[in-house]
Length: 289
Ligand SMILES: [Zn+2]
Image (cartoon, rainbow, N blue to C red):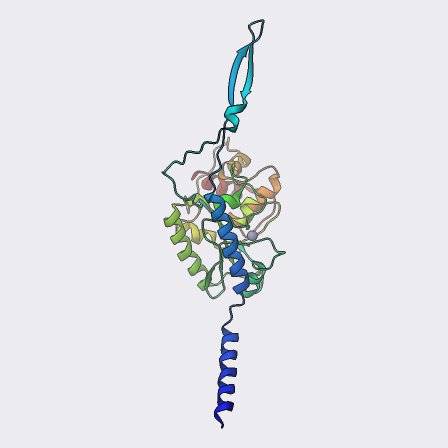
């Protein structure tokens, strides 16, 4: 083989190798970095909040007339306090992807029209992929309510589990999830009660994670509450809808709230009514709040 042929062959091989190594998400990774930079630039801007100074004068009858001191309104003054850090996530919301592969989910999170994202996705094999910095606001919760919190995206981390919605979650996946939750709970000091599902915060719209999701196992590790093994009977005056509301459920649609509660804590039955047994489970769960 002539030297020239060998060079061409080697160059071809090198090209093939580099093509294989090309990250298919290189372009969207650049978009991520650009957007993150825009956000940090936004935070760098000192935006003075100027309170208009009010002055009080008195009219000819001695009645007070309050007016704005226009000069004070235009006075630019900014005082930077020196003690601060980043806001922390205080909730974790668990989802199932309702898709067939991790790759499919990653594609969804990187195409422009989808308008959804989460901080983490965990594959069936236990692989954990982080997509967003914990400190940025992901778009995973959508419209929803938990207690008095109406913007869950602003205060939560979203974790998507690769699962089609009608199959059990794999052991490898749950093992990775428990490890990740442990890290997040410690790092951000997230309260035990604040590990919840997408269906909990959006009962009229969402049913993820499915009834296959082992919430009791999570609670055993300190992620969310569970009613306990020996159940006490609720007192006569116990009001189930009040209990659901105190736990966090949006009870404006009572049937949807009951379904969401049952998907999480009863699981084998998600009908929109509460049996005596369901009420007993609810009461014992409610005792944690
Ligand atoms: Zn979801």
